[in-house]
Image: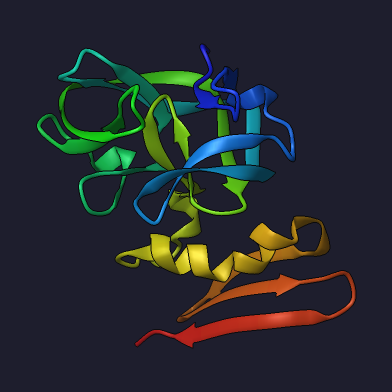
Length: 194
């Protein structure tokens, strides 16, 4: 697969599969383009075949993402599998400004090379589009607006990734995210859903 690229501090493009911990990349944080340090790969599936979608935009640009990725539309993150022709997305131009683009067509592909990257702050900009660090698999209860909740819950992981292990799980009617260090449970968030 032709891997997607992020934008480094010096403006160079780098394939996601070659990104190294500590490198500064462009991110979208609180409505602005910023630089943020790459902390870790939440997932790095280089060889596993998955369903990807090639998204063609009306500005003649395109991006290929797995169906598990979330991408920023005008006002919220949408799962790639929920996008349709006519959906509107934000695209970063050469001046680091965002334009509203419309999807002209989508095409499903079977590819390998799926990466979810956690940065210290914000959401990584990949091929000039704002992409979430989280996959659809993190939303095990199919909750609305899960993206902002996951950003909050992973704050410690973003700041100190080598100190923590994150465990996500569910049982019958409970959802649990636990962030732990090597010896002590730091914080558990457990919520019962009715």
